[in-house]
Image 1 (cartoon, rainbow, N blue to C red):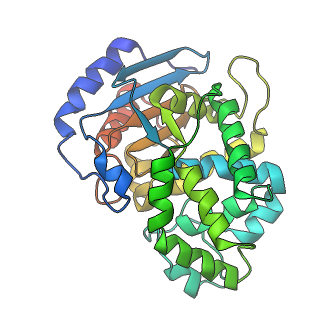
Image 2 (cartoon, rainbow, N blue to C red):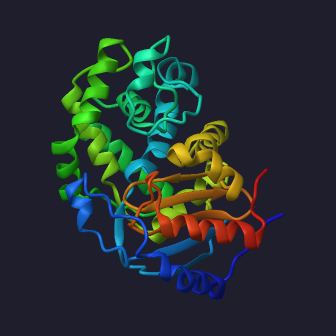
Image 3 (cartoon, rainbow, N blue to C red):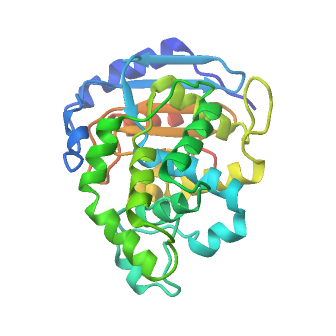
Length: 310
């Protein structure tokens, strides 16, 4: 049964979580993100009928960061097919941090456990078709334009440059996977593509609209056109449930129970089959790397509207 939330509810929830903006910490390991103001918080829901409601700082834009892993996975599946993608990347959740290299060293075969950790996301981005980073980024942006219904979206050059210059661990992961045959081609070109992918810049409504397409089994909300094959949209949402909230995914599934993916910019994208796309934003992060305000908003939404999928 389809569900709806109204504007008044969103405004009340935003007012309630204002007191949490001082908790957590804005990430400083990516210099460009350290400038974010923790007071900038927002929420938007795009219902399955296309209706959008939103509250908070609606003009503020932020980068997708790890939320882009869901989008690149969908595109890589469409480009290469399920068998090839999962010959390079596993399907299992992990309790290790998202940037861990440990499992690459101890797993046999040596491939990333899933596409939502950094190693897996790098391997997936490596599979996106295109002979140059510009071509791959162009295809990713075109795909985002389709999902969001907005051709104005681009990437933040300052954030991309900042991440590229400081991506020492991601370079290590990529070189390790190149040694084992998971990654092919130039590591520097892969990092160029990946950092620009993570730096794709959106507002709260655009992110909710992307989530709504995944919620709608990959179909465009207005035209009904199948942007993502249904099976691939379901694969992406399953990974959002099992791996989408870093190593807090298990507790999030119990407390909130909505397919969701977070990013270290402070954004979280949710996709609920009976409600639509959900986007929340709050730059201050908890110790797991998830938005403190965003987690509170999603828990309130899930509990008060009974959105648990289980």
